[in-house]
Image (cartoon, rainbow, N blue to C red):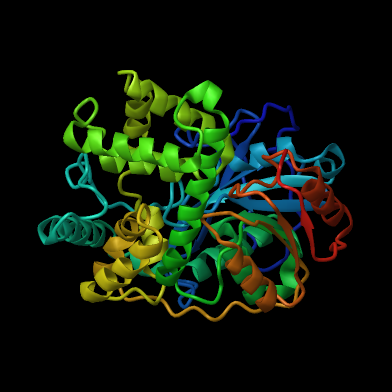
Length: 474
């Protein structure tokens, strides 16, 4: 989430005493959020202890940091998660609370948390990885076996370093444990049922909670839905053609704005200009640090929401006119997050990652035929999982009959529509609303009255709409 919404909301009442179950209910002491959390001033934070290993509930404990905005006496407590996996949650509570319709905001206090292994909740560390990933980076699509082996060695080193710094924590940074943490948050908030809004990977987390704790699952909205029936390894190959198709939409949009950008009047012409820029940057990286891989990163990031399409087109126009500042600014932002320990910790504990690089190579070579701009990129993002130092977890299949509202954009590249349809099938009490756009994790942050009105009614009444379709955001 990048859009900041400046609507004033009530501050969490720090001195309020919660009415909580008699068993294992920690007392929350609300105060200021950690200074590095990025929380808004209206937000308060508290911490609780949870078991590192739920098989040993009285064993070693770790810390969760919870954030909240609104009144603790509100009828409903809405827990929100931004996805990632491994994205910090602190900050999202205020954005969601400010974006909720007034009638809904009156009924809900909104809470978030940094999941275990992330941010201000006993984080995973991979140490200093700045020397492992340098810019300009090698091209994602290797030109030869030597380039591929350099990337493989980099992935191996990242995995080994994460193991060295976080070997005691990594086995327990799993989606199921994060869902169990959510139930501890529910208990701490004194609620019999937990209402929940999850985006992207947060849909998998919410569906896991509904599977483990159906009796405590309240009103749940899952937006941009992860495929529950295949491994994370396989979902990357579902994403590849979806990103390729979305790139075609972006180039087509730029072509329609040719009077502004002068990059071509057809999607094919704009794509050719993009490939020309890739070739130029491969020969001479901008500012000595933005090469072809960095330009590819920029394209992939812009495909998550069409709100970013004009910025990408502007940066390309500037570069063609000798000003690489837009490209360099984005490159520098990416450089700060070249290795995401939390994301790797959650992803790599999933089963299904081949430990034989030969399998990765051939699966990616096949995917490259349909998605030449994204197949190798997607593979390298997850490649440390091939060498991950801990064994994969064995989660129970996602299954639940609780009433859940699924929201999905038809052309979402990061969570393709197939995943939402499969989630709809395994969450037998769910309803699926699809919009005709392609924005990822857009509920409350795109102008779509059709989607918003259906979700509003559900949050207010608990009554699910019928399965249906909505126009794209305006």
